[in-house]
Length: 240
Ligand SMILES: C[S@@+](CC[C@H](N)C(=O)[O-])C[C@H]1O[C@@H](n2cnc3c(N)ncnc32)[C@H](O)[C@@H]1O
Image 1 (tube, rainbow, N blue to C red):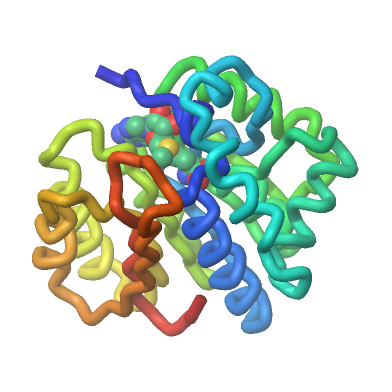
Image 2: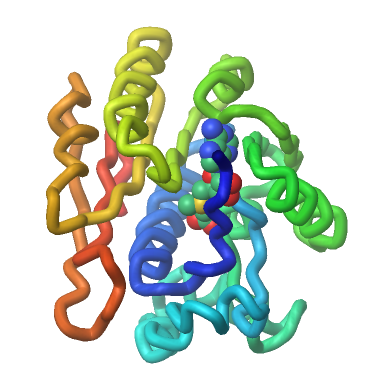
């Protein structure tokens, strides 16, 4: 069933919104002490925007101005500049590389990725990465694996970024969040969702049984994407 590959969508309008918020969230968290960053749906961490898959959809191309116009003072801008210096002008960081850029040796990173090709690419990308907080990668279902890696001594930050290939994933994600917060009420969670015209994201938001804040971005007529916008729900203390 796993057909989604993020390379088709990397650096599109939704990705840029998501990653700007993620980078700010992590930047704020790192001011407070040691971090354990966990991700259920990691992707491959690093994307070549000239790969045939990216060119096929043209989504990165459509959002090129959005990417270039990220404010110079925004932390994501600096991360992108560093990535371009290391890998080349056409490379773009996924969530896992954004986390690796912001966290230090005292922190840890746990990443789940189920797609065999994406998992292999993620492993390889970290093998050649120059920045090394402790990174562990699991070729496992993020919903069942990640719970095993919550730290007892560090602030746990969980990023949930499903592909929502199956409609039931919205409710499954809400149930997952509710279960996790029963086990660790201090867990900090960020979850991404698309804003579609059928408003199916309410199957996620309406089922989360904890207070949360939202950051939503409507693309307007800049974008021809099927989704109308990009949303993030945030549970816990850290802002974006
Ligand atoms: C939206 S992409 C992730 C993008 C990435 N978080 C980023 O921002 O750069 C979702 C990823 O989840 C993977 N995936 C789908 N179902 C999964 C599951 N149950 N457990 C772990 N990974 C899964 C897909 O293969 C895909 O690479």
